[in-house]
Amino acid sequence: MTSRTTYKRTVQLSEIDFSLRAGIISMIGYILDIAGVDADSKGFGIKKLNSENRSWVVSRMALDFYRLPNRYEQINISTWVNDYGKLLTVRNFTVTDEKKCLIFAAVTQWAIIDISTRQALDLRHADEYNKYLCTDPSPVENPRKIAAINPKETVIHKVTYSDIDFNRHVNSLRYISLMIDMLPIELLSNPNPFHVEVNFLRESQYGDILITGYEQCETKSLFEIKNDKGAAICRASIEWNN
Amino acid sequence: MTSRTTYKRTVQLSEIDFSLRAGIISMIGYILDIAGVDADSKGFGIKKLNSENRSWVVSRMALDFYRLPNRYEQINISTWVNDYGKLLTVRNFTVTDEKKCLIFAAVTQWAIIDISTRQALDLRHADEYNKYLCTDPSPVENPRKIAAINPKETVIHKVTYSDIDFNRHVNSLRYISLMIDMLPIELLSNPNPFHVEVNFLRESQYGDILITGYEQCETKSLFEIKNDKGAAICRASIEWNN
Image (cartoon, each protein chain N blue to C red):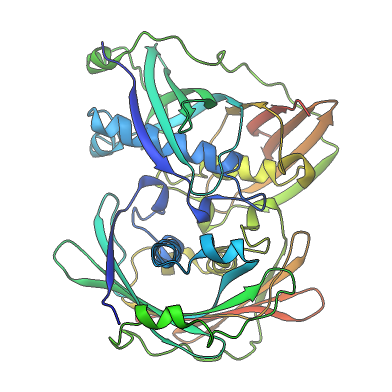
């Protein structure tokens, strides 16, 4: 058993959007970075896994955004893993500002894949995880399964070099970026607290065609990315309180 | 007069490409970040300029890539400003690895714009820059004017939310990303030393249509981004030694 680990980070100029705040993509980028750093520091990160032809992939996330931090603001990112089952581990995050106010919270679910077969591996043999479990409850309810949508608008994108990450597939953040880019920009300028959920369903590779669909249902923005064979790749929802 | 300033940086997982190295976009991202940090630390960065309705914009760059650093590699980024004229300052960079081998060098030219009129301001009244000039010569020849091209391929892109930065225009790195994404991916997997030049010619804004053209002339990759009115926005060339 262990306790939460906290990392400091300062919002950089390159991480802010037109509203001069770190937006949804940067905030999710911060926690994905910290997930990597924290797992590596405990001996079960990409450094170790890749040497064994394995890798972490994120499967689902649920995120509460209370306030977007401003440029140069210093934030504290705390993370802890509080559960793991056959296929998924649960990694949690809270982000606080210098006044210790909570500005963001997240629960993320991760699988380990075999790099050659791309299949998820059984995590229950990984006894080394036990020692780093922290029993603090998740700060957000677990992400749910998101249903297919009836998009009112779609955008087609061919996967390019800059979409691909070290796992040799489209980076999780890139899917989120494709979806957020379909929103009316006003929604992103200074939002009230909002809730985001993402389901990553399938991998996509260099050269694939992605069709991103968007549908606005009252206060909910719904997204689905499919490939050109009709298979769902990624779904997301944002519940706004504006 | 002053000397070079050096910053340490570790290549993060989120900054590497499919070849497990920090690619062209990440390397240019590092120096743009450091340009911001270094200027702020000396009192003429975005922190001060934005409070006076002014901002830095990059105009041209010439970059020598000797080796792309690997994930988790620690690099040392040195920067110094060695000249400024009426419209442009010259900021230089060298990047070395832990063995002090030079892996990257760059010369970049910057203008200050008035945020409202978007016009470049006269820099010669800025006496405060004198004290931070470092007379070390630039490590790369100054970037030249790049001519229009006859593209063999074009890709159309509508400017979205994630393309826009704190200057409320398309981010410099985004143009480079649009261009690099047109290359045969083999060229990017483990290149010999190569030379890149970029000319940023005009701003583009949210909703603009960008047409990125690419032409391969023997060992040279040539790029031009135009808007849908035919005006050139950005041009670049890469000289490969493969």
